[in-house]
Length: 85
Image (cartoon, rainbow, N blue to C red):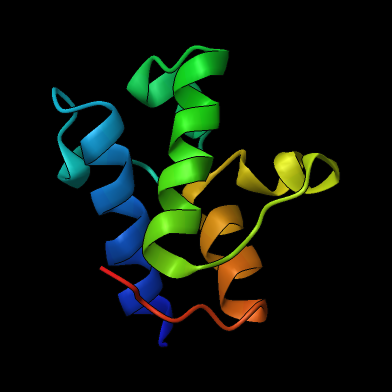
């Protein structure tokens, strides 16, 4: 998958967890949780959604990679996701 495809999948997963957020307003270099107002349970649900859609497991040791949108995309592209749904 390309960076753009992964970015679109990540934003779609965020939208499912935080339906009130506008993907167009997400800054790729700022903390996603602050921009979307995600608590820790929302964050875990986001990672579950990432796994469901992209088939990539995110171990707890990699959570810091998911601080920003750019970090999410970079981590996921390196792991070669394959869209499931």
